[in-house]
Length: 90
Image (cartoon, rainbow, N blue to C red):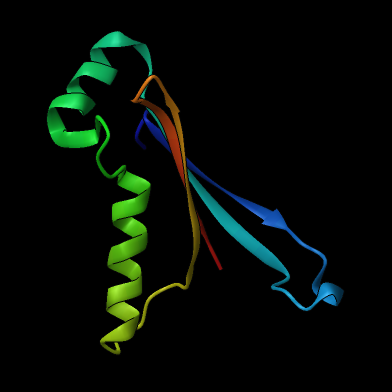
């Protein structure tokens, strides 16, 4: 289990026409060392891990590979530095 990410299930109202539940994978960048490490991996004004995973899952599905359906990715940035990001899948 990674200390920088966690996954949890959120139950939704299926009568609204959406899924009955979604999964949220949250990536955290804690402390300046983690933020700087992420910056040197390209996260400063670049793509977050959640966005890269969203794009990978969408491409796999487009090519016919069975994969979960990505719904949305979210980034929390402060002054360009990535603090956390999240991927929502069905």
